[in-house]
Length: 105
Image (cartoon, rainbow, N blue to C red; front, side, top):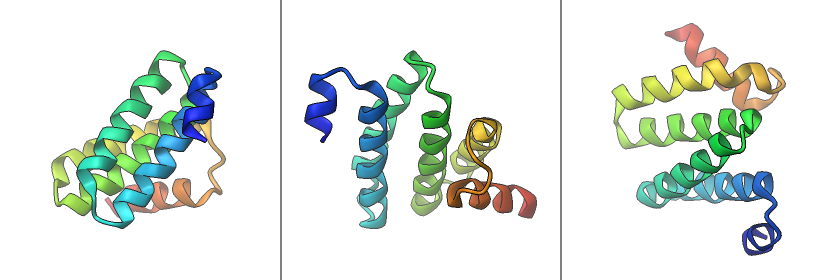
């Protein structure tokens, strides 16, 4: 799917696929690979001004930084996700997770 989306210049699909791959790597504790994919996805989302994708990328980066024990960077990613939440449905699981974490403070 990533290869097809890249070949046909479907930037949003490229971002979403990279996020899916990163989330799978986070679940497997393969954080270096997750960070690399999320960095690539974020670069594409910023260039294309894809704000909803940016939210999901910041959410995944927050989870990855938390999992790695990098709490300072995790806080920064959470703040970025909280800012970008305006571009997604606040009832999606990721948005609810960000809101709950922000409220817990």
